[in-house]
Amino acid sequence: MNTDTVKFNDLRRVTALHGEEIAEAVQRVTSSGWYLRGEETRDFEEAYARYIGTSEAIGVANGLDALILIFRALLEAGCLQPGDEVAVPSNTFIASILGITENGLRPLLVEPDPVTMQMDAASLEKALTPRTKAVLLVHLYGLCAYTPALEDVISRHKLLLVEDNAQAHGCLYQGSRRTGSLGIASAHSFYPGKNLGALGDGGAVTTSDPGLADLIRALGNYGSQKKYVFRYCGRNSRLDELQAAVLNVKLRHLDADNARRVEIARIYQEGLKDLPGLVLPGFGDEGSNVFHIYPLRVAEGRDALQIRLKEAGVQTLIHYPIPPHMQECYRGWGLKEGDFPIAEKMARSELSLPIHAAMHPEEAQDVVRCLKAAVE
Ligand SMILES: *Cc1c(COP(=O)(O)O)cnc(C)c1O
Image (cartoon, rainbow, N blue to C red; front, side, top):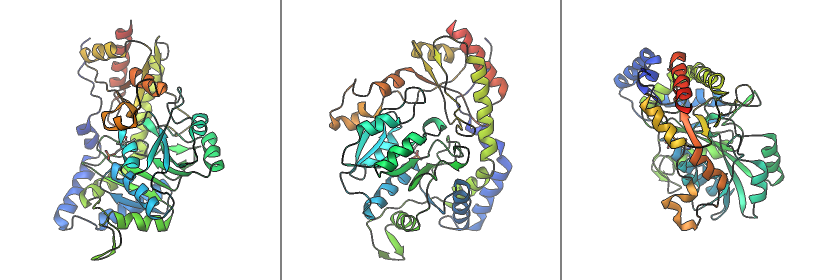
């Protein structure tokens, strides 16, 4: 088949969608002479908090810092104690786990529901121990992971709910509340490839707890609330003015950009629904999936299919090829293959199709045609 390459993501085109406004914003910051902790960051924090539905948003350097700062603040505030367990999905991206272990807390890996690929309420309840004090809920692939069943387990066991919203900007729970506003605090990443992406690194914490917000602001500012007075041994984690200005532009277009992703996902859903050996992702209820990733599952021969697609000019990725418990960095846990079979099966079968806000429907049709040819 003679198609141009369909890229997994195309950041040049994604940026060009709002290119003029972005160039204007960059020019404004460049000529202002003010590059950190200024008006752009304050405007973005206010607009993002309003969008998510929290009273506060705090710009930070990246998504991992957002997670690290949330757990550090919960420790400083006495809501968590060193060694406490934080439940987290066994199939998440490594940063979710690093945010926990960086703070001397212990991740309690919970297997996902094999259909939705999100944390499973029954598995959570079964895994809980007396040391489990919090849940880090990851809205993986852009699908809302929260459910009434999880809400029930979390409230009955008096667990703190923290969200990792790095993949789900704009996603809704039950059609009204945004992910990122559901628990005590939420981490957001603005890595360029995310649904709301900067032109470099960026991140934020959202919360409606003013005390926690002050603490996180201080911890990201060397531990200082007053100039040259250091209450905590903090770190330096700032969102810079250039990134904030770009994000101010892109936030205004986020809902429309997400709608384009959903449109691409619908083309895949329609085009692939009868293909044997493929499991397609669900859409959830209205607004609950912003399709950061379109995660197919391939019952058999995933790697061979990926190669055939590459030869046909379709770029795909795997999210993620090795689950956290089998990573070298966590060999000290003493876990092995077989300990989290659902996460392991996902790592063997997941295949992410191209999807981004600048993708044309015709490109998605090409991907469908290539996939049909490749599985036949
Ligand atoms: C991208 C991502 C992060 C980390 O964000 P960075 O900005 O790259 O540090 C954390 N959690 C999840 C689920 C992510 O996808």
